Length: 108
Image (cartoon, rainbow, N blue to C red):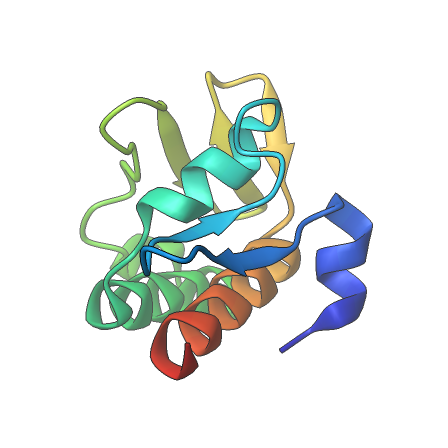
C-alpha cells in the first residue's frame, strides 16, 4: 500500500463493521468517490494495463479511453485521467491509488 500517495490525497481506507469498504472523504472528494467505484480487482487490473499503455507511449492501444463511473465522467488521455475535461489526475497517481485500493480490497 502506498501510504505516501494516500496521504497526498488525504485518503484512508476503512472497513466498516458491516463489512463495507469505503474511502475517507468520499463525500467531498470526487477522486475518492471515483476510486471507490472501482471495486472489482479484475477490472482494476485491466484499468492498470491501460494506464501502463499510456505511460509507455502506447495510448493508441487503449481500446476504451472512456473511464466514466456510474456517477462521474472521466476519460483517460496520454497524460492523465480527466474529469469533466478540466481536472486532471496524473497517471502515476491514478495507478498508485488503484493499486493501493486493490490491495485493500483483497486483504480486508
